[in-house]
Length: 614
Image (cartoon, rainbow, N blue to C red; front, side, top):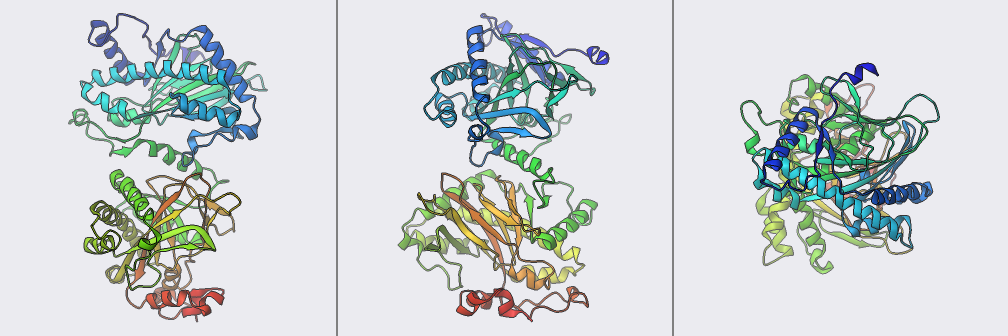
C-alpha cells in the first residue's frame, strides 16, 4: 500500500461558498478548477454542506431498512427494457454487493413508485429522506455540469443538456467480508453516465485508478463530502479531453458500507460539439443515444458470461470491418459458425439513426391504432404479407407487412391504402428504416457466401432478385387469466430475417435446446436464417426457432426486415458433396408461401421438407 500513497490524491473542491454566483470571479475560478480536475483525474471530491447530519442519518437508516427486505421483495425492482436500472445482488463474482435503482430518482413520483414496489402500503419516511437527498445531489450535479459547459465556452449548450437529462439514483450496500483480508465489493469499471455524484456513510472503500495505473483510496466519509465522477457520456461529449476513471470498491473491516450514486443521462443524442474538434482533437465518437448505452453495456456483460449466453454477438460497428481485412475474414467465420450452430446470431449495428428508429416505432404504433377494418385492407397480391391479427390461437399478436419498402413509391401505395388522405411521416419512416437495415442484410449475405467460397457473381445474382418485406409487430398486454404467449415457437419462411425489438420478450432456441432471451437496444438486432436459407445451404444452416413471451405491462412492438428469393432458388452446388448429399429440390419461394397454410403443410412435421424436400 505504501506505493499507492506516493501518488497525488484526488482534488478536493469547495462548493459551499455562498458568494460563488455564476459570472463572479470565484465562480469562474471554480469552473477552471472543475475542468482541470476532470481532465487530469476524471473525478474530484466536492465539499458541499447542503446535506445535514439529520438527513444523512435518515437516508442511511432508510437504506438499511430497504436492504433488510427479503431477496424476493428486492427483485421487484425492475424497469422494463432497462436491466441495469434494477436490482443487482447475490452474484458469485461480487457476493458482498447489492444495489437497487430508482429511475427518475430526483422526482417524488419516481421514488414513491419504487417505494410502492418494496412496501405496497407505502413508506413515507423512506420517500422523504431519499427525495431530500436526491434534490441535494441533483443541485450539485447541475452546478458541476454548468461549470463544465462554461469552462469550455459552451454555455449555450447547457440548457439543452439539462432539459434532456434523466437521473438514475442507485442505492448500494456492501457487506463486510467474512475474511480478515480485503475483498472486492464491486469490480473495476467506468460509469456510463454523463456525470455521477457519489455519497457514502463513514465506511471508506472506494478506489480510483490514476492515469499511471496506480490505485488510490478516496476518503469522502464526512457528511459534506461527495465524489463527482465523469462517465463515458462526458468522455464522448468532451472528445476524450475528459476520461471516465476506472474505479472499484474494496471492502475491509466489519461494517456494512451504504452509498448512493446519482447518475445523469441524456434522454437524447449525445454528440461531440464542433467547438471541441480541431487538429489536435479530431472527432473520436459518432453521435449516440445515451440511454441506449446502458442496454448496450448490459448486452456486453451478458455476452461475457458463458453461463448466461451461447448465442454469438457480432460487432458490425467496427470501423475496420472491411472486405478482405483480418477482422472481416474472422467475422465471416463467426457468422457462418453461428448460423450453422443456432441458425441465428446477435448483431451490434449502429447505422440506424435514432431519429429513424424512434420515428418508425412511433408510426407503426399509429398504424396498429387504426381500426381492424382499415388494417385488413388489401395491400398486396402476394401470400401471407398482409395484415394478420385477431387470431384465437395467438390473441396478443398483430402484424403487417410492407412489400418492397426500399421503393418509396411502394411505401406510398401501402400508406395510401391505410390513409387515403396520405401520411408522409409513416411513408418516410418505414422507407428510411428499411434502407438502413438492408445494408446489414447485404453484409451478412456477403460474409455467408465468402465463408463458403461461393463466387461473388452468384451473390450479386441473389441480391438482384431478392425481394424484401418490412414487417411491424404488436403484442397487446395479456388480460387477467390470459396466456402471455405472444407467438408460439416457429421458424420464418424467409431467406434471412433481421429483427429489432422495443421491449423484451423475444426468445431463441439454442442448439442445446435452451431458450435464450434477446436483449433490448436500438443497436441490437437478431439475424435469423429461415426456411429458404436452409434450402440454399442444403441443410447446413437450420431455420432458427424463436418465440415471443409478453413480459411487460405495456404493449410490445418489434420490427423485422425479411428477404425472399424472387427467382427459383436451388441449393448451392458447392454445398452438395458426399457428406452433404442433395436434400432439397429447387425452391419457388412464393409457391412455398402459398403452400404454407394448406392442410398438407399444417399436417407435416416440416413444411419446407414437405414442399421441396428430397
